[in-house]
Length: 252
Ligand SMILES: [Zn+2]
Image (cartoon, rainbow, N blue to C red; front, top):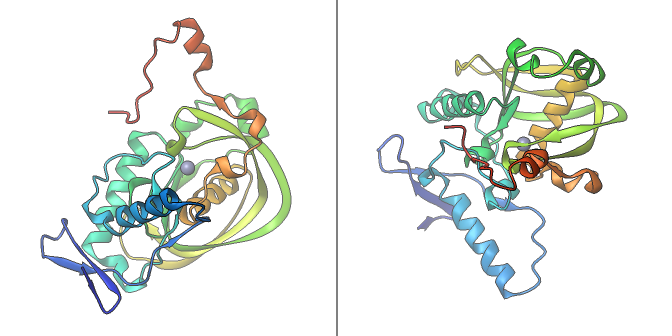
């Protein structure tokens, strides 16, 4: 149903009936070649505009149209709304349960310009000291960005392996800028008291920021990876078990 060009969708979280969604979702890279492409784009638009009816307790996988849309900016006044609070809480729960360094809202089916990043001491222990040093890893306390903007500070590109919970089970080398500045609204912890922030960072955190920013614009690392390095992260286990392994799409 549509009124004055503004789509109206049910809001299952508030149980208050309907919520209007301003703006239009913009599909990325939809150069349509035939009728089946057109139908796929329409299906994608339906699944994105109906995002509030989605189950958002898991990470969406590559192929899901929601990962290919430019996410919508939030009205800063909406940051304190209970709906956004719930989205932030859900994103944090999912990020922690997948033990992911970063997560963007579209990855849980929410096409809004939000991402969070967190790299704890415990997570860093999974990497050898050599890897931590070469990749310039640093502990990152939880940071939540709303309506972030990215500026490249150092255009030197750094090539390292990268993975994504939306491309589960694979990794590839990806070149990223060495240093970036990200601005937007920061939510301290999960308290929805957004305030403007700018954060200049380099090395590993800069890589994570660029990866998450790409998610907000409908891009995945597979679009820019060194294709010859694309690999199944458990290929050795596949050989050891004669192919009898199970790759879950949820840690639970
Ligand atoms: Zn990702």
